[in-house]
Length: 424
Image (tube, rainbow, N blue to C red; front, side):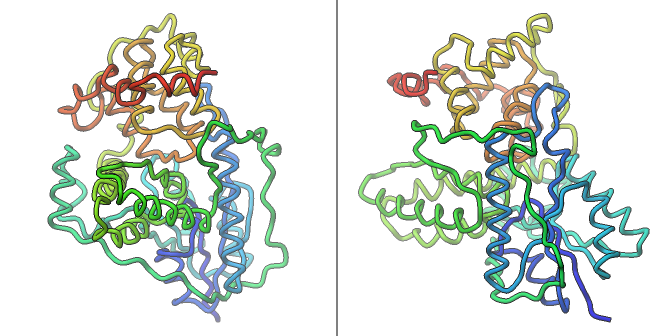
């Protein structure tokens, strides 16, 4: 009997640096690459927001089709199915006589719950679900401490792993693949079928985000080119905007690291290199914190106690904030940019969060849920972890006083140009 491995793609939509795919190819006679579009990712949340808005949904659909195209280039294909993974995976296992299932492990509650449901269903069929970890710069097993002992303070975490851990090289992308015989590889639904409307590119945006591994790798090369150009401008730090492709796994964080590391010897690029590396380390930190503490990050009081909440006016104030109608120019500009492009800078995110929490006295979880809907680069750990930190209920309670709205506004819009550009 031939060995067939089902490779369940989730937020890992790439061929490069994909240990799961490399091992599946090496240990099987053929594989069945599968992407499952889960309708639960497009429902309304208890906060009155959507799990996934139109901009990120479009980016996701493009990324899935990009993966299918990449697989076809090496002799394969991608089976696309709509439904619940805990129902679909066992069905496919039986239909295609699968001997093992591979997938990447997630850290947030909804994603891990789905994994558990799939694992339980497969256990009844005596089929193993093998977990891989491919979302972080540093592998969990290479950390200088067990998960339970990871420092809560980011600076301590950064110092220790940079001193005592290594960043492994990338796995090479496969150049050939054998896939199971499938009559109908399936199609992706259109946005309209997900009850979402296509959103036109905003002319004020300096980048059109297009999903897919090829687009992510191309954008990475553009960032490197910008770094080369920045060599003539001392300490120029440019926003890389790589996070959208990182969030859905079109780009591997290790790929980003090793590519920009090639620029290490170029004069005046150190600041840009450090800026990108810092972003990758923050991504790792929050993923490992979620692994350490689990669902505490989704609780309004988190690791402390949230501040005042104006319960009587909360919904009205939340509505003004998300619709860019607070009357506070910079905040309204931030929300306009978010609503029309799906992307805002880190300082803009902090500015909007501080205003919602401290000035409008709305519970931070409403803001986090809205960002979940709107951000093209949403991932649970970074989004909810950052919001908890700004709200003062994060796991590092010593960081409660580091956020300052006035200081953020000065950094974001020192001359008022930003508010003018993004006035609705």
